[in-house]
Amino acid sequence: MGFLERAIRRGVSDAVGKAIGKAIEPTVTDLTNKAANAIDQAAQNTEQQVARSSGLEGAMANLERSVQGYATEAAKNMKVCPNCNKPTTADKKFCPDCGTQLPEQTVAQGAVCPNCGKQNAIGTKFCQDCGTKLPAAIAEEQAQADRNAAVMAEWDQYLSHYPKWSCGGSEFNIEEYDPGCFEFRANFNGNHQAARRAVDEYRQILLQNGFRQAGEYPCIEHLYKMESGVCYHVDTGMCFEASPDSPSIAFNIQEPRGGFDYVKPDPKKKKSFFGF
Image (cartoon, rainbow, N blue to C red; front, side):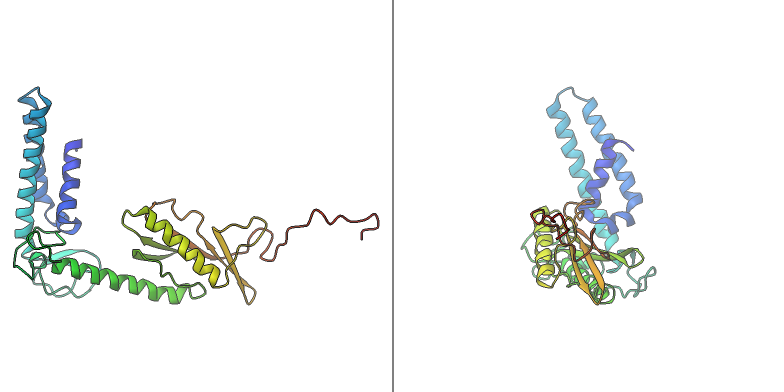
């Protein structure tokens, strides 16, 4: 697949959403090939960059209209699972992949404005005529809130010795990466500064709940708390390694180097000849 085809496919995915985009992939493939051919033809017909740009814009505009039109028609007989995002036909009541109850509305109905009745393009969050938030956007927000709540319930099960995350973000996830070691992730959807503020805020919450710096090399990225002889450790030192807007915080049982109660020797206190 060439650069143009890949760029067009990314544009299609952004325009109609991953679930719908996957469902109509055979038609999108045909439209993508036609659009790429149109762009190449426009480039061959003229040596001027302006004309090439015009051909590109026209081909992309035609592609977007074609894809959106087909997506809207296909979406009239399609539902998407709020749990796993699997597209299925409108006659289903439960997701065939995960068993979650499907919404009453089809994907197309979710893009109809409840205020003015306009049928908006699939994937639109707000009505293009009056600005009203669309049913599909509201349903997705509620589904995500439900998924986040389910993860927070897991927190009570796996991370009960740590203060619960209350610093924002979405698409929460808790994963056990080693026995007894857990990783929590939150997505801030491109807002890097908000992600960093959230981690700083959580560090302060940890400090307020009895966690502290400890060991030979104390630092704010590693906070510890001793309870009944067990040392609980929160590691935020590499939380942005994978993504600058999706912090990943590690929780495990581990003492710092030198021990939780390590005290740095005072160089001023020198022993006498007799050891006193």
